[in-house]
Amino acid sequence: MVDLSHPASRTRLTRRGLLRAGAVTLAASALPLLAACSGQQAAGSPTTAAAPAQAPAATQAPAAAPTTAPAPTAAPTTAAAPTTAAAPTTAAAAAPTTAAAPAASTSSLVADSNVKGKLEIFSWWTNGGEVEALNASYSVYKKYFSNVQIVNAAIGGGTGAGGNAKAVLKTRMLAHDPPESFQVHLGHELIDTWATTGYMEPLDDLYKSEGWTDVFPKQLLDIASWSGHLWSVPWNIHRANILWYNVKIFKDVGVEAPKTFDDFFSVCEKIKAKGITPLALGEAAPFHTAHMFETVLLGTLGPDGWKGLFTGATSWGDPKVTQALNTLKKYFDYVNSDYLSVQAGDTATLVVQGKAAMVINGDWNNGQFKSENFLANTGFGWAPTPGTTGVYDALADSFGLPKGAKNRDAAMDWLKVGGSKEGQDAFNPLKGSIPARTDADKSKYDAYQQWGMGEWTQDTIVPSFVHGFAAKESWTTDYVNTMNAFAAKKDVAATQKALQQNCQDAGVCK
Image: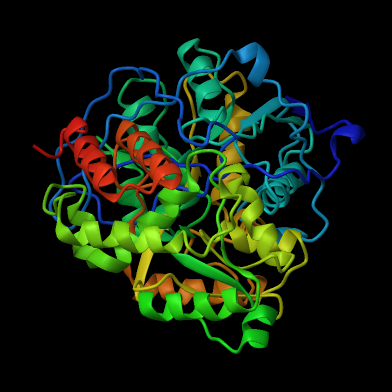
């Protein structure tokens, strides 16, 4: 763990993490929305991934109606030994230089020098954009609670199969040694694993005192709720189904952002003819293929068909799923040949460097592009992934309050910062995401984010599978591993059979 009060620990981190695949499902009462941010995984075997460890017994919510997704009994990945993974000395957070906090008069936060001691914050934010955004939250916190010593417990490796962060968190939670607060995908990733099993405190009083029920969308409030209580505070809203591209390459080749799969393959052919890799892919650890296939499925099935995959209304054996797998197989004709040895977090850099023209990933890439001084409209452009115009594949990051936190007062103040307008307007411009609050200062956000805010209000919202919104964690892990195997073998029939088995193992399909 890194003590941010020490000057030597405030050096900017530049190493890449890998995308984190979370897992959450919506209860029947929840509206289809977002749940958790990106997550990048540590490098692992290109064809296998760690199996999830047994989580504490969790109450499972009933299956959702066809317009929502079912609720999970989440199971974090196998825990690594805390002595080797729990003290990440390389994940120090740097003091942000680009996100000055707004004047105190615009904030509901109140300075309190009586709050002292340590505040340990656990996250997987070690990638470009993530580090800067986390530091912005820390800076706002220190502005008001200057006598608290922040301990950055960020661990690279993410939360998906093969990752370390969630495994270490599980070890600590089960040992009743929690951090003051930890990053978690909004909704049942927290609720089904820790809230229903009695490891978390409800946050109803905090929501009431801060007036958050008036500024967070009702959909988010529903997703953060279980048994009549609210359990975490959303920091942001992310979107998974974005195709990012190098503006100069597109201009030089004479192509525009594709809207359909046919358009996409036509663009790829023209770029490939110029000797440039059309599409960046990083599957050194299980994740990126699963994320990419999520967008292909969504573009093939449409919103209702997509949501039906998680209720049993759409069969994983459906011919359209076969079609989507064949489309994905064709994608591999245009990716970098070394994709099995490239980290997912490095694919955005390939686009920055002009070594690849496009990458499909969530809008944490916006934050990473900024961290590399690659700016919207001049450096990079964006569009919904093929076939998904008008559909918002959503996820969100949040923080909760574990029971037994050593410095509960400092933890509550951390949640106040994250849920405040000042906190969200400091964090999200750097993270690449849009704020969860409806009263954000839009002038602080870039062109992509302002576009995204508009899309959020008018698009059809669907839950991300890979990032913890559409299915319980064990199912997500199985899916990510299945698609990792596809990346190595490209066997459509075997993969579709495995996807059907994954659904059966999750208890949704018969």
